[in-house]
Length: 350
Image (cartoon, rainbow, N blue to C red; front, side):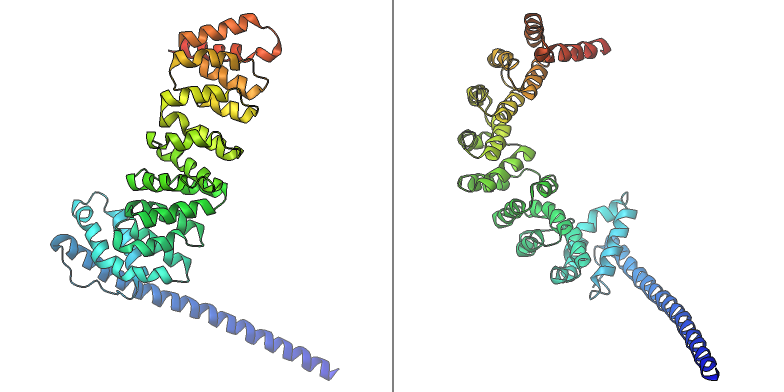
């Protein structure tokens, strides 16, 4: 019995010691956190003083704490957020990033911590040039999607062929759902159009061609791409064929018209449907009757989109819808009636 009491007493003492140590640890963590915040505040104050001198004199000497870029970068972002209406800051912040912040921040391109690499991408959005080409390619190919997606705009700002080639290849490697996020960041440049033109010449790589057409759909194709699109609308690869149809009309309306009309007879209803959707901005006289014929299509989606396009073609389109409504009374041909009602509602609201 005495041995049992001794064990109980030992356990209680052990628990008391553990609790005491935990309390000490909590206070130590709080104390260390306080000390860190105190010294960080002093560093930030010193960096702020440097920013003030730089904005007023365009020269503040050497940026303090150059070996701790994360503190400098966060201070820079804070200043940029606070001083959006400060003309002095807006005038000099790009030079400050170029000459003072980036030289310290570039080492984060090799950082294992993805958060540091993300900070570097944010810095490059303020300033980047061709000297950072290899670094930008590395960031575009970063394994962390949030970094590579944000690096898209940086790559567009660099606008050199090697960077843009790496960007297109990166977009091509990700899944279709992720492609949407990458492509949404793009903007048109002549160099990007040139790179896509080169990539499309390799028509054997159907996935790469599909990616290029998706990019063109976002940034806007030109007549430079008509031949490639006209070639690929005949492809046996359905996804490539649909991607090419979506941009064909935007490359050359006159040349695209007979091709799209011909596609209305394709055996695959998906092809016919995309062809109908792509005809909305073509010459009215050329497409009225083909669209009218599409109202008889066996596929519901084709009929719906044909009626929708006709309803937006003015009086001629509405007249054609009305004639089909009068000719057919069965349920299969109710789409014209629906879109005419929508059109009438819009007219009544005007």
